[in-house]
Image 1: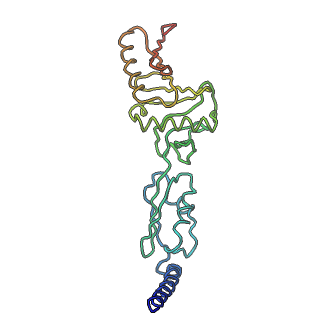
Image 2 (image 1 turned 90 degrees about the vertical axis):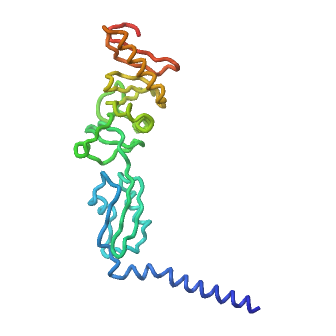
Amino acid sequence: MKRWLTFVFVLAVAVALGGVFSRVPEALAEVEAFKVQEVRLRGARFLTHDEALVTLDLPPGASVWDDTKELEARLEGHPLVKDVTVHRRFPHSLLFRVVEREPVALFPNPTLEPVDEDGRILPIDPSVHKLDLPIMAAAGREGPGSLSPAGLRLLAGEISRLAQGDPEFHSKISDLALYPQGDMRARISDPHVTMHFRPGLPSRRIQEGLRVLMNARAQFENGEVTGLDLRFENQVVVRLNRAEGN
């Protein structure tokens, strides 16, 4: 019986202390020394400190003891922010570690606007940040906004995939276009050639095609190689500007 009473007493004390400690942050939030005086930003290349402050919209008297999950949710609402974590730096600072949405291409809309791998248009000024990225378009169609949202996502995702799988080849793409049937056309700067392919083209096929291209250029001295077609399985089709055929 005594053991049972001891257990009940210890449990009651624990519950009481838990209630007290749960109210400690709330009480400390009222202490002047813990009022937010500094907001630090880490990991941001495009998001400015001022933009972060506007998005956070910290009320007067905000404390480092305030709910950090709410602050994270606010900053994640910014179109440039993919993920964020908040760290308290006592007594009066908050540190925000940001993972940004990375631009992978430029979309004429009508001015060039950066988009991420999901086709989201990002509020980044390309002239300020000197972005050297492929331009996306719809093949055979001119004018701003010529890509549908689905086409935008497909092209952006393909550009991101190529950047991860073959960074050297990706760096040579000047523009990437989507045909209505789903095929793609890439203009390559070095070597200067137009490549046709289907989404998901493996890196080994790209390298195989480029090797065939180099051999063709050495063989056809009087005819400039203008195109490379990798849409057909186990085939590399080379197009010449002087030939009616391939």
